[in-house]
Length: 253
Length: 250
Image (cartoon, rainbow over all chains, first blue to last red; front, side, top):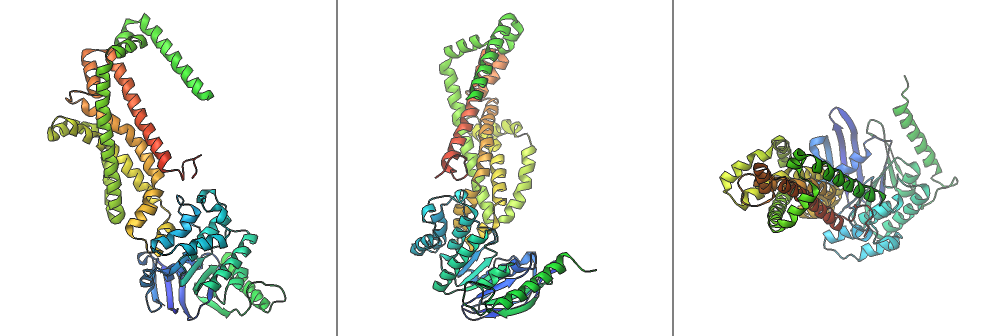
């Protein structure tokens, strides 16, 4: 799997949201884009997914996934995209929602059944989304995204609506499932701890949409304590993040 | 339960007041007759009244079916060609402000007397609310659901059957509820223009001959027909849209 982004810049009218983003991923890993709200993280994911509408924004630079443009790679059906909201089909049950991506590909639904069990959704398989809690909906959405075993997995702040306990449980489940599925994951988040727990590489986006820090995370996931060797990364990221939030919301005159 | 009892009591009270007023005032009796006279009339002319009701029922049913088929069909066409919706919606709004019942005589001239102009009139009136509501449902659809289907190699037909159609059902049924009563009104109004049988024909004759019993019986039957159509749509909604109908789960 080879993902190459070269000098990607995106603007909406006069407002530039991404500036000269370059990235190259050649091995199976998780890359996280860390930045405050409105820093262009979701736009980046939409560009990678091939779903971005070119008429609504000006895009320059190149994006290549396995030598294909995002729009071409989209047609292969090998992208899994988990949106900020679960966006489940409300008239389908939990099991039907998770099986759907496989049914659309005429693929064997057995992996969906495995995911239903893995995510602890067996008892709710015949429930409609309206009968589920927020955490359950997120688990269903994650299972649905992973069901077709995508080679490129895009996660747009998927755990932001969850409480801490559920977040950590899903981190573990995601990490375990990633070990089974060979995939490149691009995660977008503003949560430093989440970025450190799930990533092999973290890109920090500045307020002008440029990458201000690109760091490797070498650790045995998951788990962060004060004695962890990555503790200094956490401190550094915290400082960077705090700086950007302060700069954005409390400008110094 | 308490509300139902109150409603029935209010209805009975209204009938008693009506009977008393009509018994004392000849003018009132001349215009709106009295409940007992109306009941006697309905009993004596039940065959003719049922025939007329059956005719209007079949015309309105065909009109509503035609309107629903055309509205759903044209909306699916708009999903395939999204620009078509942008062109059609303003035209729909203009058409909605035209009093369509005025074209009933024109339809009879074009299609000839018989079932066809009445069905078309009924369908015309019912079409617009069904289409406009369905269009609103499609426009309010969560874009990320369509994105999810696109990412999973869904064809356009998959998107229609999995998202556009089922997720627009609340709006579509809202349109059908309005359309159902309009279909009955359309059929009745079209029958004014020289149709030999039907509730509209009865209303026309009753005003010419000054037959308040026929008029009032026809009014009650028309209301019952509108109520029946509305109830059928609500029943269908409960069958086909369990996922959002309150109190009904899978």
